[in-house]
Image 1: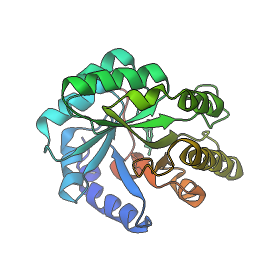
Image 2 (image 1 turned 30 degrees about the horizontal axis):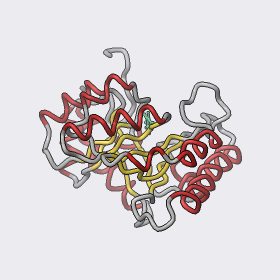
Image 3 (image 1 turned 135 degrees about the horizontal axis):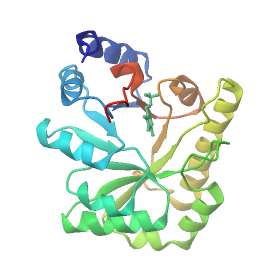
Image 4 (image 1 turned 30 degrees about the vertical axis):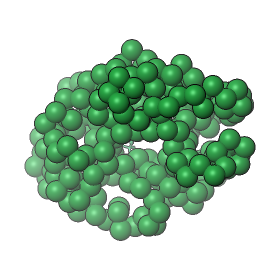
Length: 231
Ligand SMILES: *Cc1c(COP(=O)(O)O)cnc(C)c1O
């Protein structure tokens, strides 16, 4: 581990936090980085962390302070939900009713309620997961989710295309914000829990905030580049 990396964490974190509007929540994306990096960010006041591998997140949960709010931000494999249901705060990236149902079932076993964000496919790229907007609104219209008492639908999540075309990125984020507003009006009016628009990573969080995001997920900008060669 390069000690320059760990020494810079607090400063980069604070710079980003200061640049964010007050209504925007920062999720520090710590995937692939060691627990020491998370502890450094924690010591600088950060409490919300994002991981995209269940086992890795569970191992970090074991050794780190228990007031950390863990967000699972990856694609949710249904058979892995069980392994995080006892402690995860928010599952971002719910992209099927089945995943919502399974989260509800596992949360109930622990007497918990887990916040879920509906991942919406906004990118033009094929590879990104998520509901298509129509598919998601059909699922919401069907109404079965209303019977799930151990999940709280907290809003939406989306990832823009990985492109230098800022206009395209901005318009993809705008589509997500418009879907949020549509869903709020039709299915969640008067529900204060449905309030989160999770959009924006290190390279595009400014554009996301411009479009109306109120939760950004920043990894590289805080912790430095990820090294996947050891994983
Ligand atoms: C890795 C990841 C991020 C953070 O990406 P950076 O470019 O390192 O900021 C955000 N969201 C999701 C879903 C991710 O998988």
